[in-house]
Length: 305
Image 1 (cartoon, rainbow, N blue to C red):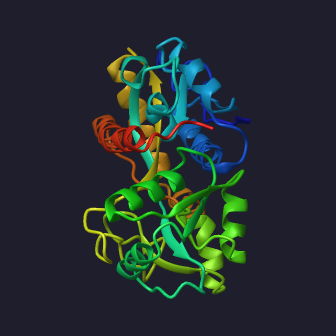
Image 2 (image 1 turned 180 degrees about the horizontal axis):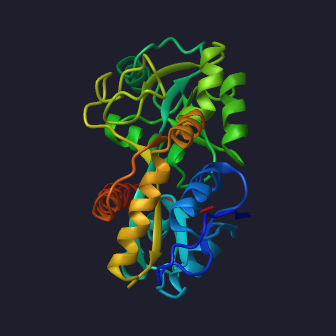
């Protein structure tokens, strides 16, 4: 996708189109890239191209790209946790990329089938302990946020809820709606329509603070599981050794794009809250998740499917 830009600024950078490499068409990565690209084009005075390559391909491509500010990677947690899920990962998030900014955060929601006699996380934990191994939770891809949220819940609550894997979050949600599964940990966008219709019951949001994306729901930490937090984040990166002035310029323009009212609204409607911070904040968020999620993956023995 090529987006019209304003007149060239006359600066030495940028003097040609800029490319945002990301995952396949559709989904949160693609949507976020396509929402910020036109605003970034306006600010940079150049065309901005969204290049959909798929997860692993996009990460490898940007890791090897010239460090000149013309190629960026928009990615989620798979960029920094793949090393825990797979052997021989071709990139290293610290060695191969220069963080630019956090983009958005996407909380999960702990939801249950309405037939389950629980209305809080505390009650869910009590029931799961009373019926050890009898409840199951539906999830899609191994290592995705819904799966990791479920495994973290099990580990922190000390309960045995059996994971049932489906081909994607859609089938996993269908399993919950039909009662084939009793519990799930989907993102807010997937859960919200079914919560509103009463087909599933929301118990808590998985972020540390209450979320406007899940109005009225307490946090899991406040509802029976102190210290619990799980969320997905998206960030944008340049190849390692990209000059600091270019990183600063990209950061400023991307943050400006994210704070555009229409961009914020459309991201919110898709189930994402804009963060828009500094490169250091993205680095800190990644390192925190690598420490906690990496340990969880190793302890539980999760491997990519």
